[in-house]
Image (cartoon, rainbow, N blue to C red; front, top):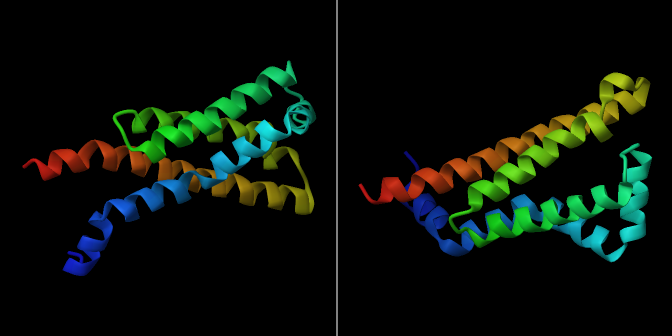
Length: 140
């Protein structure tokens, strides 16, 4: 069991908010950058051989910003934000980070990014799980 001061620290709403902001930072920063430089976002989608790159850029921005906002807000739709960002992140692995199709240093770099993406997906799952079970635990 955690020391009481750790429990008190982790129970603070400001710490919980900070954790949600930090977890989603990569998504909302990327979404904002794409929003303010839409031509670069479209070029990124085209470079990944996605059809209708402008549509994929717009959808990417929407998922990144809306998913992040739902998690940061901490309301009843945290699961939706976490799920959307998790599925989005999983889909980027075969599209942008397919290390099995690369060779040498490029394959290693892409593999590291893919593994990092899997870790982020795990963090998103934890956020959804905790948001679902903590209120039930507190009410017992």
